[in-house]
Length: 159
View 1 (cartoon, rainbow, N blue to C red):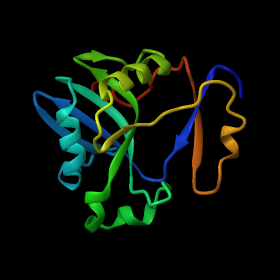
View 2: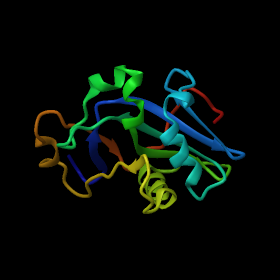
View 3: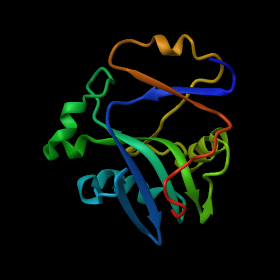
């Protein structure tokens, strides 16, 4: 793995898109199902962020005491209060479509939007430098890498 890649943890959860616009927060699955009602604590965390609008990409998870995701717990709505979001990309911010920016720039802006507030939305950090050691993580912790300079490609031209 070379310097053009950003290695990061791939959590064992569901991919979610969080949209804040005009004071309203909505949560969608990759297929467009509205799951806002399922995760009120993520909605609350997104509402508190100091941005009028954003479109955030992430993965919802429930972690055990050891910090490892427990995917099976996501299947029951009874566990929805324990869910939080690992945010790993910012596609829109304050009306600006960021998808054509390099990933490293979008992640930098995402970190800024999230700030240091403790909420149900957590920045999914990545490793700078050679990711070889990163990919030898213990079982239960997945990993993935994306090119730093890649723009975000989606099936839709609108956000």
